[in-house]
Image (cartoon, one colour):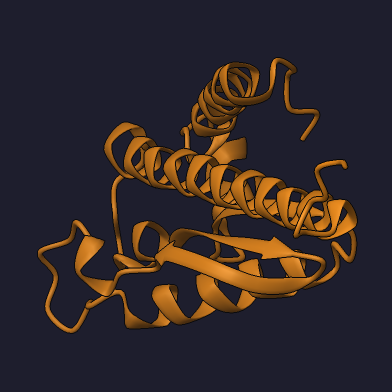
Length: 159
């Protein structure tokens, strides 16, 4: 007389695998969202340029994509504009930033992508004039992402 299991071992393994994948996906999304939020905060606070229209700061935001599909976003806020000029509300910047980030993220068809942008087309021109738009933000975001991924998975992020 023996003991017989009332469950299928393959079902248990399959369920454990599904649960492990869900946990990894949750951790990845949460870590990337945290890095994105910090990047937007840094870009808006540390940006050394003066807002003329409010659009450059308002265009700052991030999207998270998985296999080319957008699964999260934040930033792109017209109220982030730091200008006192009338009729300068940052709405154009928020719209253009979101569109640019979505376009870039959709090109990453495999795995996760975190895309942080200052989405106005003149952002590079501002950087070339020795004003920080995203340079410091990018370096800070990479360091933070590596720290978080190393703690979560024991390895650095190669993004």
